[in-house]
Length: 167
Image 1 (spheres, rainbow, N blue to C red):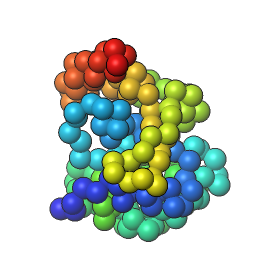
Image 2 (image 1 turned 180 degrees about the vertical axis):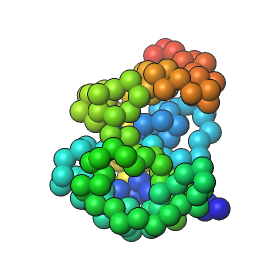
Image 3 (image 1 turned 90 degrees about the horizontal axis):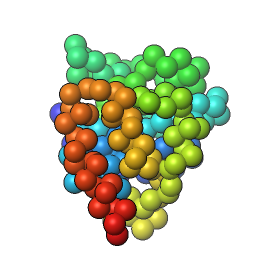
Image 4 (image 1 turned 135 degrees about the horizontal axis):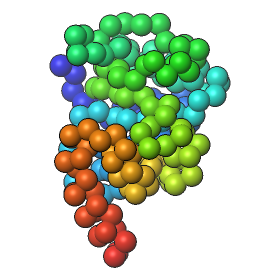
């Protein structure tokens, strides 16, 4: 099993100039929620140029398709055309798991999600900023997804949102 290193994944995406919004658990963490997560979820801008940049970043991360039957993943030649099909989503990389959402639950896609996003500094990295979904959008997406693990996280996320509005 690969050690989870979200900072390295985000740094590689930024070095390839991929336009994306961080969603899910990492977005919640960056917004102050004490939520544990084991993957990075992103919604990339779905243009051909951007998906080509994403394909290059995935190559550098040694990304593989992940499934229940192949948890260690299967190597696959990623390119912009394949990434645009929306058939891919769950990947594993040398830095941990990465999930791609062209249409995150509850949202039409990158453009709608990007409206509420803002750049945040990643951890203690003074030079690494990424676009992060608003906590209210993370909550809306988890509600729309309706998976048991997402629903279980909602009370903590709602509490974090209320506390952030008081500050």
